[in-house]
Image 1 (tube, helix red, strand yellow):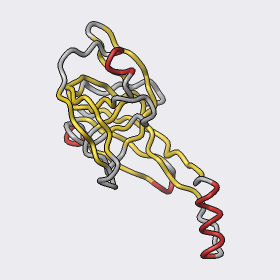
Image 2 (cartoon, rainbow, N blue to C red):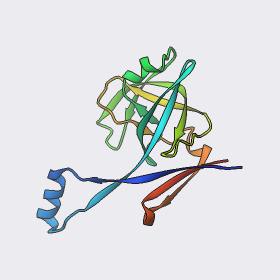
Image 3 (cartoon, rainbow, N blue to C red):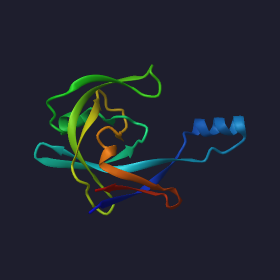
Image 4 (tube, helix red, strand yellow):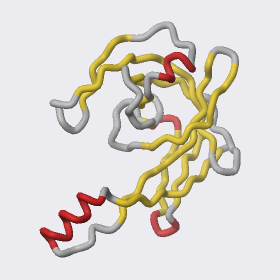
Length: 155
């Protein structure tokens, strides 16, 4: 039997400087961008915390959380790492840890528990990102752009 969690695709505006530059150079309106937002619960010893809105990033290898999650999840073990994104000049110092999470959709349906790796940044000013490591293989990810929706189906 399968379990399908459903979400809406979030429409976002580009920063004003970006849209102004595109208009100046191309004479066009760049329009909107789109983000896949999910809700996640995290296991902290004997209880769950959340839900937290996160970006489901199909281009991210590893999930990312701000520093406050290290304390919130009562983590003791971690591996120090440096993360590089699109630009190798920009590195984020982080703590790589094994955690347990669940997804929850807008109707309150919850996924099975997922053990995954997450990088907890040594700073607060990072977005909450769901990366694909140890997560992608747990479900089928389907996008219906016409209806501005996507789903995660667990088997």
